[in-house]
Length: 482
Image (tube, rainbow, N blue to C red; front, side):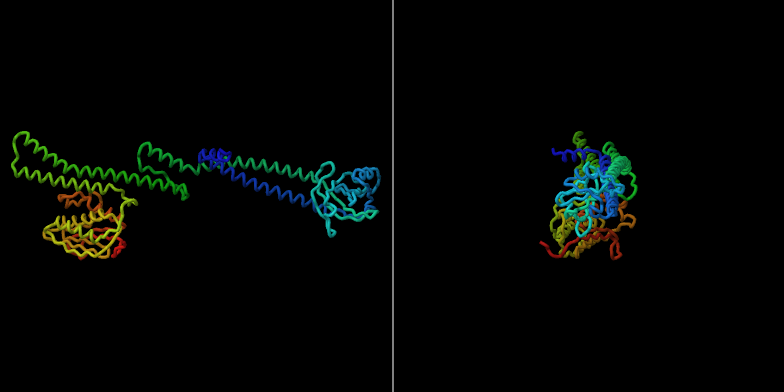
């Protein structure tokens, strides 16, 4: 693995708290480094600018004779000569060092000079238009210096000369080096402080995450869904905590619904199973004792057993229907359904279940997207509900217009205080518990309509008369889209 890959892998293996502290320290280090470098550069430019201004104020050049200079073919020879001259008024100043250089290699030192300025090839042409030029240079002994270059007068033999004026900058560089060390020390302390502060801040910021982790581990260990954690603020951690609380509450509600469904299903199954067991025990006992039951009694018992088996079959089918998730399944088979044909088929089955009733139906074409079998079952459940509560020889009015299906009966109706519960699973009106049914039919209707993107409601008849009216609305169109 490459070094960068190993470093990345090592970094990712650290805890989130450590990574945040490291990133904070790195960010602070980068900021301090940039600030320190900018400060050092500004100070350096300021110091060198002062040196350049000092050089610019130096005494302007004159001729070697005026400056009482000593010339020689080489710098060493010229310096040796000038040191042997005793003059009470030397041109050399303590602050600056001057030196003439010529095109032919001639070097001249004013009387009093003690240092050799190392020339460069470009010095002879650096100064133009009677304006000086400046460069970084050094003396022959290696001392750094700033050099001013100015085209001077000609020598006695007519040779063009250039005046080099220099001032040592070793003190400036020492100051810059000290400043760099000071900046490095401050940066190091800043990085260490940033790392410690980042660790503290990360620990405080990730405290809700620790709480969330503890809650998840508690749920995994005890399976006690519904555990929540406190939410503080409105940041991303607070949003994460809120989302976890919502998920935990949803899981708790789902488990409660499952528990309630199982309990209710067990309660509903217990009655027909108990009746079946009683009838079977009576038949077995009569056969074992050789005391045959009267034919009418035996026929009535077998009829009851058949009815109870049918009730069990319907109840199990309803339970299977309701075992689907509450949210629509994106992989469920959804096709274009001729809803008017579904209603017609449901009406045929409804007429068989209520032979003494009359059906006033008006069904207009309407096409929807959904599960054909589920939609037909939902319509049949509405019709069964109307058949169950209709009086003998009553009329059931069915209308399908523009995707709005209404099923109205002329029964006793539903009290207003019971309407909010009609679509709950296993809920049955106290006044109708003696009638057959499990209380799951309308729940299946509500779930199917919700999966198809529609709405369903149950309430008093719209014309103010007796009875109940169910209204089912499904999105669609009157023409076949295929």
